[in-house]
Image (cartoon, rainbow, N blue to C red; front, side, top):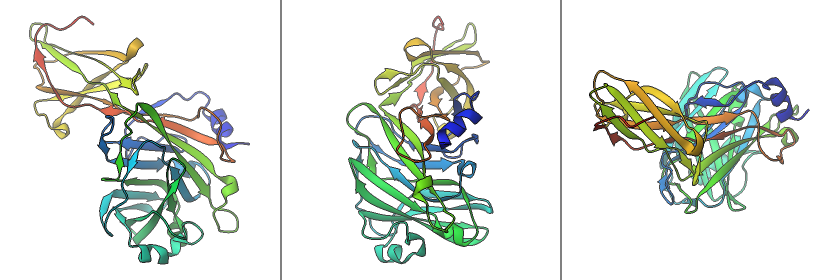
Length: 334
């Protein structure tokens, strides 16, 4: 049975999941989240890749991520340049560290590249991780493919230590620039499990999809009414020029414009046209407010998959808005 059909049957009653990125609440199916710090057209962007729930499927040997066309990509970085942080969760603990540009000679000599990422590449990256069983390297080869690039993640070093990955996460900076045309840009990850012969078996590969809507915004308009002690926040969630309906927009507020010092006040669900209205009685007015939309994840995919085991899930990134100062006045009608 195709993997997607198995999951659809298993999770027939499951709804979409509203959860945080990077280290989300666990779903009952493999997920591929692609997250971006920024969502404006043509903007330089820190992009991260998070594949989790991999223990819900056959043990992964390697992963190939295909980036869509339209993104600007810079691969000119010195060796050991730190692209971002990285993490691999395994059956025997968590390995954390940095995602770096790998010296080509060291990359080529890494045993984990054998049968996974041999030959020449446009760029060579790797995760340099530490965990309960010491240091671990995970090579990532970058190659031009079609309108975008293929990022090949080699997990052979885990197998030699008796480890199985349940989550693979790595972040990039100074690599990607957002497309200049609006659209829903889909990244596709092909997960290839280990075969009975101890080698990656492409005949059992399955697909995971992660979408970046560019541009995306849910800019809030907050007003605090001193007479009724009510904070009202209105806004519209637009992605790639179109409204997103039925999406939870979480409202955060506080005395500081520092995101880390805000607390969640609640959420509102977008209606027709992507419009949302949040209202809550508060003893005093927060000075600043911002809105946050989490990733949404589905145990289904739209359209066919080239993977023999089908497509297991799809996700769509949300957005964190800029901080907006709260105005004092009469609350607008809901």
